[in-house]
Length: 495
Ligand code: NDP
Image (cartoon, rainbow, N blue to C red; front, side, top):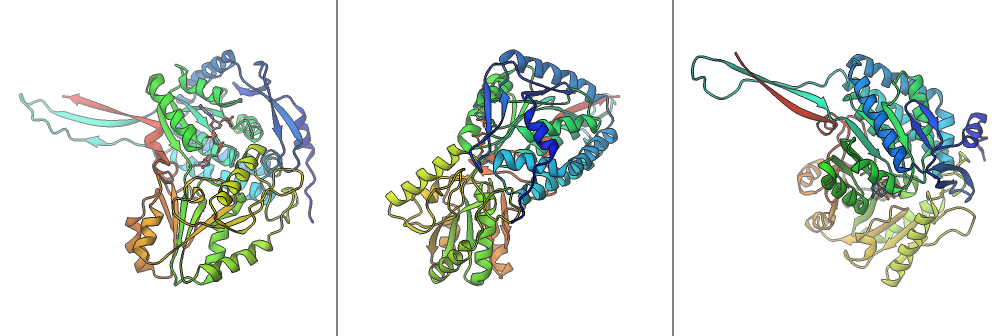
């Protein structure tokens, strides 16, 4: 076992009071309510974070309005440079940030290092390149000239204003960085509201952002439960919400945004993602694919697959091989860098998974492997494989957001496509086959925002990401985010 020793900088950060990052400084919130931050690996409270009061939300928004003005005076090239600096600082403080993230979320330390830090830096650098490439277009107007006058027109992409970035607990650093980067390159200021379960890392990153050269007020962080998020959306001084989280909360956020003042809203929500395996794929490749799609970070990935469709002729041997592989996974502390499977992120989530296991048993599903909370300190559950009876079973329809792969056999490709589409959600899916011609014919049939072929879960900053159906509105990454973080202004000139 290679157990990671906590850095002195991590221990010092945990000891300091936490509340907000306001106008360039870490300050403790005076709202009164203190929210515990609990390490899900052992159930110990590692810090407390003060929930912002109404007056503190006002102060944060006021700071962000000032930040928006000052950021507007900064050239695109300078904005880009600040993001590059921040990416360098994330890497320079990589071990500190990874340890903080693992302590608050239970994420395996290697995943924190590679994704929460490494990928976050990669995304920042990708976005940094966009700062200098945001353009409008010139248009030749179509109206006739009556008296010999001429017309010309062009469009400008202008920053939407103060953005509220609301972040879930599963990838609290990387998702916060997506929102920060999208806002900053388009010239917006941003207020991050992290999940109450995982507020620490972004508070530390906000400090680093000042060292990177960000003016005060351009990035603020305000902590607290969902009521703080709602107060920010409803506030007259904010202009947009970029939300990532569950479908029910996303619908509530969208409704608040529309009711408040037509606040612009993009919603990256959950789903019940499908993976379909054609029979030409070897069992070995299919098993590796299922582990990649369903069990990385204990399945707590919005894009992870939870519904697995396998040809009837293969389902029994495939489940046997999958169970054999899952039995070898080393379950252990997320700070042991040889662990392969850690806890889920909080006790509430562990209880929710226990409820789904009970429901699955009540519906007479076959629990092929796992299906229990693990009897040890912390929020551990077993990696679980379930064989459902029908497409309407709860485990085939509701997002567990855990390490739970539920299977159903299919008989032909038409049935496979119709089963994959049999969901109100459409965030992502994967199709596994060696026959690319067949895959290309099936791609247009599958109703999702992102479809992977022979892979699952990998997000790339150059490839737009977002859901169709009830999995959300809007896109992140690529150039697609620009539309959501800017307003289009049309200018027409007579001469
Ligand atoms: P939640 O929807 O519970 O919470 C998300 C964020 O919203 C948290 O910061 C939460 O604060 C806040 N919030 C809660 N209520 C409100 C409200 N009324 N107004 C404004 N903000 C509010 O999601 P989880 O944190 O539980 O994350 C898991 C979910 O996120 C899964 O469903 C998963 O699929 C989805 N997800 C989607 C992704 C995507 O890109 N499509 C990526 C990652 C996750 P608090 O935590 O303090 O309650």
